[in-house]
Image (tube, rainbow over all chains, first blue to last red; front, side, top):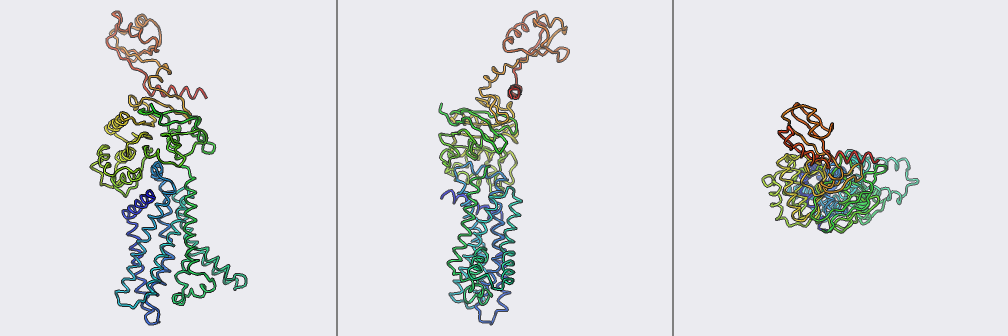
Length: 275
Length: 306
């Protein structure tokens, strides 16, 4: 365990030093603040809580941005260190390969969690500072949105490691990572939408739809944050959520599975890789 | 002397490429061993096998009593490794980098300042590794290999990129380690540099061990002639044959210089006759075969044996 923490600490140290932490935090904060103040203008009097509007816009932002950031920091983790030659030295130390992956995972999640908490927290704080009335339920929804965003980040960090353990070169890993992002964030949903339109509800029932939504971690995240009652009406996701009939527990478990399976696969592949 | 590293009949192949074939060797306590071979001869593969970074296709490796690839890391705590072309994360400082490795080896952090001083990086400890020169990175690499008083040190081409002064201080450190009882394995493609530094030489060619012994042993096995160079006061060829007592086997370097290749058996008699009052010799140099010649001899013998 100590080894994992030593690696995690070094990842965070490096992230701070090469400005990854700063860049992601500033990016998330500035986009979150922009969305908060642009988004609250039209929603002023429709009865929706101001923070709920922010949750809807930030969730949509998360789906695009967090997987991208996660893949960017993780796709290089194994193949990059191998190519630079630092992995060779590290593995001659008394440390297991799974500990290297575990430590990097914790370090990268910590960087993402910090950026998300500070970035999105800044938006909520700014909103509260303008005097908007925010009830407890909205605060809870906001907190769970931040937590699930970190979880979504963990999923893509794990997928990035899997890519990194598979790829023979850094360039290949980068290309695959972009492909993964395109598939999960854009293509999958478009294809699913097209399928539903063509099918007209004849063969695809609630069960199959649920399975298809769970097959994409970003959809699980979307349903988790945008499917609940008050937010569902606001985001237009209410209809899908009802048909799919997936509870928060199922969605959260799906995200955990999506994080742990690629992580385990990456650790297995890495442990078999010859240096 | 306790055996620290035992490589028994080890082969390693990558697909159809045989990187190492049937190598056996034993490295003991307090020994400094030179692992010599061309680039791509299998030196690095052998070192990786000793580190447990790769598994042998056949045969066994034991380092400090453990199988290094079995996943137990107690031995690695007492093992130092300097890779060929060592590299570090550019964003961290020298001290931070060394502290990271010290934590992994459970070495007290207060020892790292002394270590940085020892390799001559004390003044640059708080600079980023990205600003270091090649020689400074190499010294940082040596510093991390020395963490925690290792009993076995595997140094892969340790002096490439070091200037002569640094090279000397590097070998001073190696001598201290040897005096302390550490087993030091130095890999190199230049045997000459290791003269007087290594107790034993292991020559590797195309993945196979072709020679193993002290430099003196290798010399006597190779039976290479000693080169005797004499300066003459009078330059007549015929008289040379007279006092040498044989014809041929010598060549004229210039008007007053002769070079004679003497086998180990005839060396003394040749020197006697060159030093006798009738020989017109004004000066004399005895040049034993250089390590490079020795190395070339073993490589040639290895090739012929194929």
